[in-house]
Length: 465
Image (cartoon, rainbow, N blue to C red; front, top):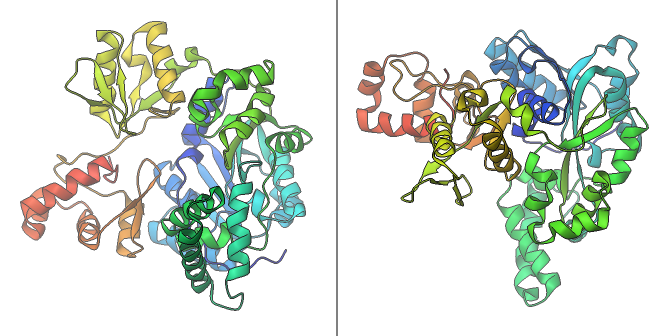
């Protein structure tokens, strides 16, 4: 297959963590393999920005990635070598080739396919589900992202405009600049119309994102959106069953369309797959992260499964008793003192996780935690999330983030598997966190500068345990 030579920023995606995928599977009644000992495959891994940090965190697991770009694979392989990771390998291949290789019949417990399905020709799309069908273990879990109709139609307006308005012979990043400039020029002229609002929002959104996103989302030769039920049907023809969304909140009508949740249920007539289709139509969602499994799952998440999981969330106490502010800025109220104590423990532990079994509280506690997870206020994992603290006597940076800071790429990967922007000044401090004791570090940077940096690194989960 021929693909355009378009630069791609290889980022971590929090929802692809095997511990997060395992937690979703367990909530829906499945029995996935232990995430910290699993075999993981990523299709279209680019330079490994997603799976290399996972391999660094979970060295008892094995990771394989492939991508069509030999340049990206070479870059990722150099990073693996620099980190000394024996449990991850990358190879140059396209999905069709990978699916057809007889020697590639290894079974994987988790398969990740982010940013490929909507941007590839039909043979590659068929190969994606063939790989998931043939190489996923019996208890395996796969997650596949794609652009969704009908919501993505509005984005197609932006794509049509910029595809016609940029110089096809220009260098990729020049074309990205031309596209944003064109949208910014058009938006004020059309601001009073609904059509103009789409263009204005598109200009603002794309200007805030990496140029590589615009290049692959709007300027790539292929970008096709699908109806949810069509993708589910294609997956089903390969023996795969839809479980839920990679982000638990994205499957809940109360989160995606709170004013129309009752309408979604009415239109779907109790059919959960039809409910997801109607949720797309009513919410205008443009992107999905669909989780599939070899075995059928339960119809809804079970709070009973929480006792086997770990929870994390940035819950901060407010001036009001039992009231806690979540990461979005909204306030949630604990219904009793026991749940308030649990909220406090979760908040104090963050960015580390807390085993839910330790929180007690029985069915009421589980129901509240599940409700908050479905609202996006809490994250769940099948394995503990462990981080370092600013008070450690010899604070050490997560080795992946330290290497990324040294390479001056402008952002680093956290232990929550997110990207975090760093100023050059903070990057200098992070690079130095290689096991030096606090006294030595203070002599280099000064106690005030060091203390402020370490406090931020702790909040962002950049300190290794």
